[in-house]
Length: 492
Image 1 (tube, helix red, strand yellow):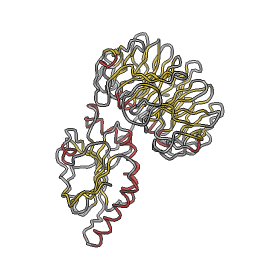
Image 2 (cartoon, rainbow, N blue to C red):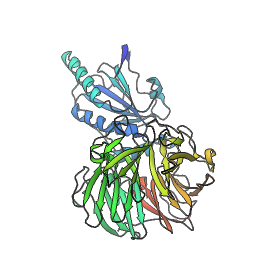
Image 3 (tube, helix red, strand yellow):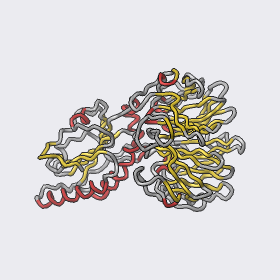
Image 4 (cartoon, rainbow, N blue to C red):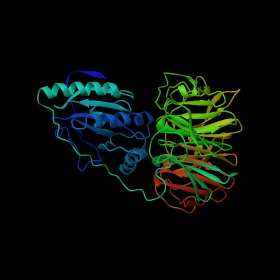
């Protein structure tokens, strides 16, 4: 915590365009006698997501004296929507009150400079301290304990419980916020990361249910398909009868033996690492950091490690996991894999010894030439704060937080997530063209330009179709490659 010099009165929470998870807007005046923890965040930021377990733990430990308030100050245009934030709260299981600070009024009043930032306020309404970045949970706990002891002694601590009012909505259907999808044309199989049901669903290519891997209870148990546990699984890769799974919420890579249905852990400890701690080692002794997508090249498993802004690889034969590309600095920097920089890589596609990367926070698509070249180049898109919805060539094109990729017919298909579109990218010329999706969030089937998606997060292509994990619609959509016509896959 960075201690303030002298007592500083915390500014009131004025200027939010909406409040969520609370029946009415909150004020610090109402909360006198409570310790208040403000969390300034934006929902596409992986570092912000890493703070959430600490907030939940602190809220549970200090339930009668601590009020956690999320102040959502959007980086991306799409994140300013109150409805989009509402769905995100449901997807992430956030139950504390959240203010939509779309115009940055509260952010500016507190002179916040970066996501995430936490501000601790004492029961009299004065700022105790601030912390920027993630990983401050233990320190916050110590300070809250000390503040509580002081104000308890003075008789100024209010222990009256404040009930939470989460805006839970029933999800009508078999899927809940599916993050990624993987189509196996040769085997006639479709694998769906049913992310918020904490499981992997296997169907045929027409949606007929075959098997489910995972009990649906978040955790990291291994074993038989129905007993094993996942936590918010994301990307997958297929190697014969082995399905690799990026178990993002557990910071693990899992292995599903499709012949036996057995689930095991092949990399990670279940604890989140920071990129400064390690460059790799023994796979089961090395902590990972939000693995988000996977690609299999026949011998090695490439991992989009969103947390440290890097690409890693797993050698399953040797039982090793190591950093492959990216210094850990968040940014757009091309060149050799040892000096390149990424910004929350979240989608992978492999073709012709080139690994394509959806670099979400940088709003770009990268190409990594695999060994022996080991070089990174940007094909198209903007930069950390240069985003939009613009067709064009190379740096002229604009994406908005793209999360998924697939390769079909020599073209890269891009799930341009916050633009609610699927784009086409020519890897040779760098030309980006809108292909499917109106650009408006919704759930509409039909012709390419009229169809609507809602934050699509994952893609997988066969020779005739593209399967889309349409995350906020709790659905898998199917696009005809020849016509662009979109339909919703019925899971049955």
